[in-house]
Structures are given as C-alpha cells and as structure tokens.
Image (cartoon, rainbow, N blue to C red; front, side, top):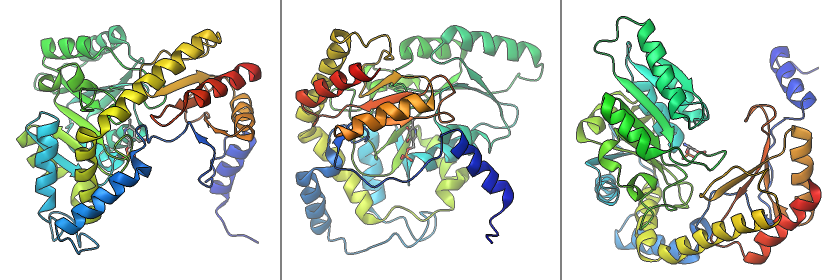
Length: 386
Ligand SMILES: Cc1ncc(COP(=O)(O)O)c(C=O)c1O
C-alpha cells in the first residue's frame, strides 16, 4: 500500500474530479499557438550559431558559475550584460536574476517594508503574488486594468489607516497580461502615480521583443521609462533564451544585491546562459526587426479574421501576441483544445483554478513564424466548434 500522505492524495483527487489536473505533456509537432517564443528565437539556428561563436570568441570554457554571484559566481560577463541591458532599456542599472520568477519573488520579498502598501492588479502573475507573501507590507488587489477601482481602493485603505505618514505605496501591474494579452492604460497610470508620489512597478515579461522600436518593451514604446520605479524584463519569452532582470536606479540594484533572497542564495546563471542573453539582444537589434514586423502583421491578420468570422464576442481585446478566447468551463475549453489538436494545432486550454471559474479560455499565442494559412484555418475550425 502506498504511504503517500492522504491529505496530498485528496488534493490530487479533487483536481481529477474537477477535470483540472495538470500534467506534463511531450513537446509536440503540432502548429505552435502555445509557446512564448513569439519571434522564433528559441529555435533560430542563426542565433544558435552566433551564440556558439560568441562563446568561442570570448574564450569561455567554463560550464557553471560555481556559486552565487556574491560568492564565486560573478564572472565578468555579468557586468557586460547588465551594462548592455541598462543602455538598451534606457535605465540607470540592471540586475540579472536566474528567471522572471526569481526576480519577482526577490524584488517583492525584499522591497516593500512593514508599514508600506502594495496595490496590485487582480490578474498579476503568480510570481509577484508569491513574492508578496514574503513581505511584511500590506497588499491589496484592484480590479483588472481599472484605474478607478485602484484610486478607490487606495483612498479607502489609507483613510482607514492612521499610521501611513512615511509609508511607501507601490502600484504593480503588467504591461501585457500573460493570460489576457491586454494592457493597462500605462500613461494614465504613470500620471496618477506621479501626482501622488506612488512607486510604479511594471512586469514587462510579454512586452519585451514585441513592443518598442527595437523590442525594448511597452514602457519605452510609450516613453515612460523615467517614471517607473522598477521594471521586470524576462528572456525566456520573445528573447528565446532564459533569465530575467530588474531595471531601475543604481540604489535599487545595490539594495537588491543585499536583500533579494532569490538573488543571494542561488547559484548564478551559467556562462552559456549569460552569453545567450547577450547574443539574443544583439540579434533582436540587428536581425530581429523583420521578425517583429512579421509578428505585428500576424497579430493584425489574426484579429481581422476573428472579426470576419464573428468570433470577437469571445475574444478579449488585445494588441499583443496573446489572444484569449473565453469558453467558460474546463470541460468545454478542454474539448475544443483537444479537437484543435486532432486537426494539428497546439492551442492551450487555460483551466480554472489557474483562471477563475467561468473565465476558462483558449490562449492563442501568435508568432512571427505562423503562416496566414495556419492563422486562418485555426480560427475557421474554432468557429465550427463553439
Ligand atoms: C508576467 C510574467 N511575469 C513573470 C514570469 C516568470 O518569468 P520566467 O518564466 O522567466 O520565470 C512570467 C512567466 O510565465 C510571466 O508571464
């Protein structure tokens, strides 16, 4: 008889009963409407060769970092990479983390202090919520992309607290939301935060590579970089590699090096990873433009087809590479996703509890390498299934 703990088994059983069990799938040969590789960099052979060549040019013959960056792992490539990131993202400094998840738990676990207040969009990424669990600051969610609700929440909370004189107030959002692909009104948000001296923190995981003249992200596309306290950029999505950075002023970097636990207590990225980030940014600037134009064209075409096929009432308005089609219930969304898979398309069903019940969705991730035929056909099939 298995001695697996009963309490854990009951939780797994609940997932099975609700048709929401998560399982690891094999990577598929289906048409890709599910990966975050928006520009095709992850599988780009030219980029792979350039990264390999750069490793040789830099004479790097080291497999691992050997330790945390505060111990033995801070090899010279890190300062080159962070300098490049700061220049490209037009900010004083950058601190590289092993992943976006690490960066968010490091930042939110360390920055907001007891007596501070954090207001975050209700759809904020799990890594930010997890980081907030590690802080003594009080945190509150506001309705998705709803500035009016944010203002109301801040007023109500601050009125009820008398001891907020030297409290910092952090407002946290994503420039492109990972589930819906939509964006807040960043200009208005910046105006509001500036007027009230609130500190704005923006997760740009799904905007880097996609928005901006050369893929710098939505904050820079809108020219707002000087009004944001901190930005998160990740390299595992459009950049096609792995890792992340927090962008901000020099003192923020110094603070995080001292207090962000996921930075301090973890082995640094291997040199191969660091070189691959340098190489991916170089590729983005020099060869990535045509991929980004193609991605934009594919997003435009997809949205046009959604309208033509009268599917728009199901889709959440978005200009990003993420286009979500709400099909309420795990059963329904799974069944449509399965039918599309049989026809050769990989479109992921996003189930509750990842999203609230009733907002289960098919998430279409659009890429530069999807053909117009694929884009048209997947929507044609969808229209026959719903
Ligand atoms: C909005 C957002 N932030 C952070 C992360 C975490 O990034 P990483 O995959 O590099 O850990 C993700 C990844 O899913 C994300 O969607």
